[in-house]
Image (cartoon, rainbow, N blue to C red; front, side, top):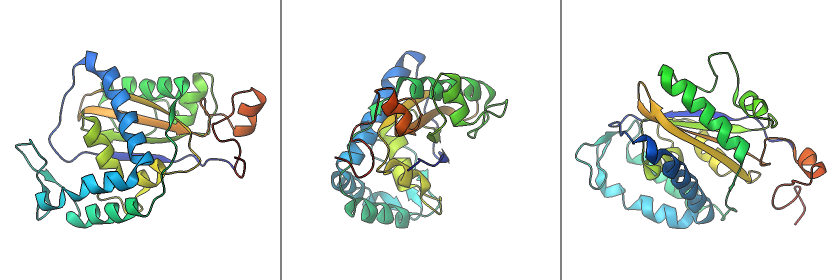
Length: 227
């Protein structure tokens, strides 16, 4: 089976947080760590989200330690839906780091952050797969982008709850059972203050599983149906 190219963008509607340049590598590691925590312990993360229910006032969410509230589109309903979804999930293996995926994600941050634009396509029209291919990999990748947050917990919570996104596509991509590798790029954004790009694939470099196996670089867990 081939992983479809999935592209997702999510925009923060809350206050913007800035990070110093020397904090960016740590943030990228933290984002992947939080994604892996959610994948490996969806029930535990559901319990964490449940604690936020009492922090809603209408559609405003008041996070612990934050002076200003975050205006959501759906209010507590989206949170409850995310909790129910997580409680129905079985644990998934963590995503390993893919160097080419990292590079492609950071390439997009550098270009788009300086321009203050958003979306999955580069100024020259390059797609996420094109950016990985330019780094020497394949085009079988998915991508998610978060704008406005410089805190890993905020980034991942936003993607999991998927407030205002009808098909909950960000959450679905995070829980795609075929994925084995991820690359993360985070940095400054001219308009939104900060952005994080997450590129994911079944293989460490975005090639097909069969190509990876031929290169002796197959994904953990083998092909579908294999142990």
